Length: 96
Image 1 (cartoon, rainbow, N blue to C red):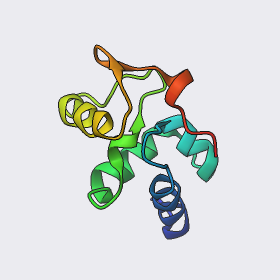
Image 2 (image 1 turned 90 degrees about the horizontal axis):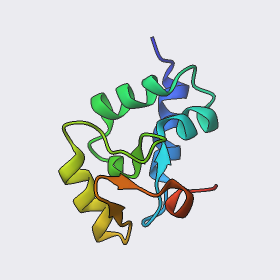
Image 3 (image 1 turned 135 degrees about the vertical axis):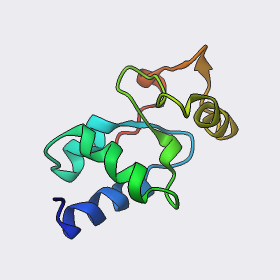
Image 4 (image 1 turned 30 degrees about the horizontal axis):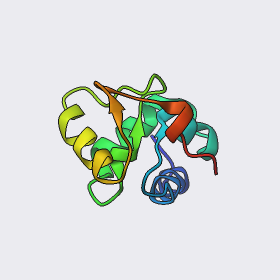
C-alpha cells in the first residue's frame, strides 16, 4: 500500500518535469524516496492520465512497452528526439 503522501509526492515530481526533458522511473523514485522504480510505473498506470507521463522512461532511454509509439510522438513534439526507439538520456535527462 502506498501512502497518500508518497503518491502525491510522486505526482508532483512528475508534474514538474519540464517539456523537452525526460526522467527515468529510478530518477523519480530517488527524488520521491520511493522504495522501488516499479512503484512509479504503477502510480502512472493507475493515476497518471493527467500527468506528463510521456516524460518518464526507462533509464536505458527506451520508452514504455506498448506505449512507445505514442510516447515518442509526444516527446518529439517537445523537441526530444529519439535515435530509433531510444532517447539519449545524457542529452535529455532532467536534472532538478
